[in-house]
Image (cartoon, rainbow, N blue to C red; front, side, top):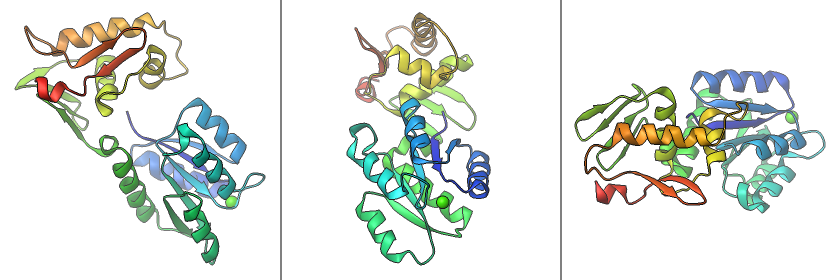
Amino acid sequence: MPATILIVEDEADIAILLRYNFEAEGYAVVTTESGDEALEAIAEKLPDLILLDWMLPEISGIELCRRLRARTETARVPIIMLTARGEEEERVRGLTTGADDYIVKPFSVPELIARVQSLLRRANPNLVTEALKVGDLELDRTTHRVRRASRDIHLGPTEYRLLEYLMCNPGRVYSREQLLDGVWGNDVYVDERTVDVHIGRLRRAINRGKDPDPIRTVRGAGYAFDERFAQLA
Ligand code: CA
């Protein structure tokens, strides 16, 4: 699934420009106009990166940044601050408040995209990698092909997204609800048992005979891509 970028910017022109360009690069984009809206959006879905305007109505960008850094779940989300030219001192403050980077308006879009990619790569290398490879299992995001050893594996669209989602964070256990949100999308109402059905299909497609199973069932919790799979396969 693509990385999600949350844009917090009250100037509509800039927000539209950013949305357009990041969507064209294949990112999922959420735009908000204020700190409060941003907090709501974050509560709904944790973004992979935040582009945060300095000058916002009500809660300022800097205050929002400070609050996000103080909360465990958002402490490590990469944040790039957008500042106006000449706010030298504020930029320094921005970085000490916990922003990972800042860019001065008017900015060059390709430069901003490059900075975003580099931060995302640092935070989670799998988000910007086109091919995921663990053990003998390979998933190519450009061609949507999946191979195990030298065998082509044919997956339905849901099984593909499920595998991609789990492979992005080996070892991390996802609840059925988190998988529904991440793979099916949070607007869709699907029974949690649907997850089990698709996990079953995914396993049947990727495992043959005595192949080690890369998917771990964690009783009472959910599913994970086995972080030890690379040693098993
Ligand atoms: Ca502004």
